[in-house]
Every structure is written in structure tokens, then in C-alpha cells.
Image 1 (cartoon, rainbow, N blue to C red):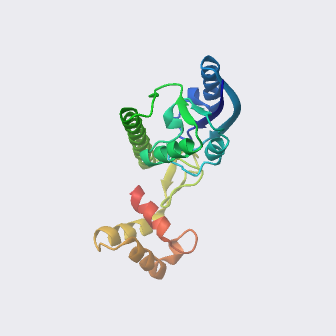
Image 2 (tube, rainbow, N blue to C red):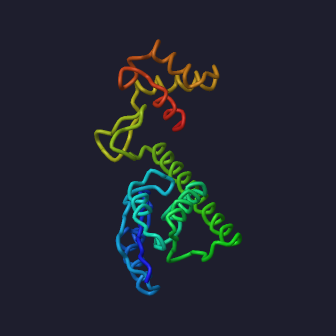
Image 3 (cartoon, rainbow, N blue to C red):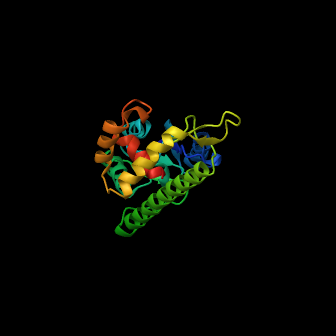
Length: 225
């Protein structure tokens, strides 16, 4: 009987499927371990963590806890990583400990060239899906904002929370003037983000919510436009 570590990860995305929660993943992995002769010696959970984030404390703790000849069990390979580079890093780290990875669903057994290629293709698909979800989420948020729907705790620059309906946004007249100037500097004068920031700090510093413009705020305004 080989020793096994279970690792689970649950996405922070708003549309994440609750059926993939860490608790449910752990239960499925424990059943898999029992059916395949593995003894679970520890469990590590990353809740509300993206699969693109390589700095996951619980993930690397799970790998460091693997005994030689042990098995890292996950529900699906994309619980470990949703990009090809990170997936390869994890594979190498597990292999360096003399251990292996087994996924309950969608896995490919073996370490031959064909099996490695298939796993890399699956990692590429997971990365594509992550980017597609991010793109759809960003588009949806922009559409909601354009229709006046409040999407967060604070109103984005250029808007304020409707006092008559806190679920909606209305235009902030003074901040809209600054938005128009930024748009003109970007599209008409072809200024860079840095140049726009410098111009706004010289000419319209009091229009910034923090009393001074920075490149991060300017970029967010441009991306949201």
C-alpha cells in the first residue's frame, strides 16, 4: 500500500461550480485512494485560489510532504495548474521527490513521450479555458457597468452609487470631465499612460480621488473604457 497526499483547490471565480468544492474533491479523492490501495496520510486544501497562481502555500506543502514512492492525488489535473509552464514545474517537483501524480478523472497513466504530450495538451486546454473565462467575466462586468449596474463595493472612477438605488451606478459629473480629458489625451494626442499621468497631475490633480494620479489608476480607466 503506497502513501498518498490529497491536494484540492477551489477557484475564486464567481461562476465556479460548487460541486468542485474542496470538501467534495477530498471525498472523491479519498474514495479513489481506498479503491486503488493508497493510504492517505495528509490533506492540503487551497480555497479561493486561482490555478494560474504558482505561489500556493498548500500546494507546495503538499509536494514537500510527499514520501519517496508516494502519490499526490487530485480530483483533476487542472486543480494543480491551469497553464503549461506551471504544470511542468509541478511535475518536475513531484518527480524529484520520487513520487507521482494521479488524478481521479481525465488522467493519462504512464511517463512515455505520448503520455507526457497528452498531459501537456490537457494543460494547454486548461490554460485556454482559464483565459476564456477571464475574458468572458471581464466583458460581462464591462457590460453591467455600462448599463449602470453596480459590480463592487466601490464605484469605478467616473461614477457614484445611486442614492435612490444602491444596486445601480450613476455618472459622477466632475469625474466624467477627467475621463473625457484622459480619452482625448489617449486617442487624439496619442499619449502614453505615463505621459497622461504626468499631464493629469499637473493640470487636474484635484480630480484624482487620492489627490494624485498614478499609472495603475490610468490603466484601469483606459481598460474599462
